[in-house]
Length: 353
Image (cartoon, rainbow, N blue to C red; front, side):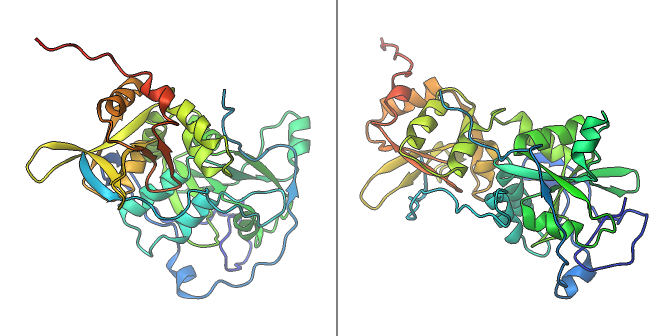
């Protein structure tokens, strides 16, 4: 199949090669992590307009929804309201993965490891879209495997995924085969399928808008291994906030893997990161994934904590106002009253002497 850039080229039967830099170590995550996948010629000149190509939005995929609900001194408290990310749709009915899209837009020309990790963490929630070449309905009716758009580089194969309709439109704009179906799936499903199908990685928005990047299997594997399988907290924080959001996050804190940020104080002792307000409030920083700690760019390291341990920490320090979840954003603050179910899990203290 033909692959595409934002600049029209003569049709070719050969897949377009995507440069990949391998064997990079990323802040404690060992893997072959690429820099941005952007041809120098494409970055050297403004992108040319992409002709409009109709995209059929079928019932083969639905936007991801949140899972059904059933002291080292840190930075100051965030001042912006915790209302969740803005909701955008380049095409009606196809919500953008706004967080992943923004993380791509913020990449520098030669991304640092921290930037790549930021794209990875913001790709662990919401919806990602896959392009299917031809008529997906006919392929399914005929019992054929779906013809997913991929990129080939030598003996490596990369699945192409998109943050929304704009990325898909750019990807199909110069394809001689313009019949395209779209499959929208939860991000975790796309990432898991990338590994299960034996691809060497996943390329996000390979033709724009913004920069493109490769998430390799090594990085995806490590990220999924350390994650809540349902990405419960991340999906809750990425979704539109309601009066029930805080309660659902508290419920999740009692069930899913969580982490704190541990660092060394100036006196050499170990401390746990807090966020402090000018009014004396203190919030223990809690994270839904180790990448959330690394994204802060501090010297802190992620450390797992059980719900009972979190409850014990809150019960044992009445001066803590509450917790700040995922400080790198999107974030939420929870006070002690909201955290009562977690505090109730506190481990009983053993009398001394």
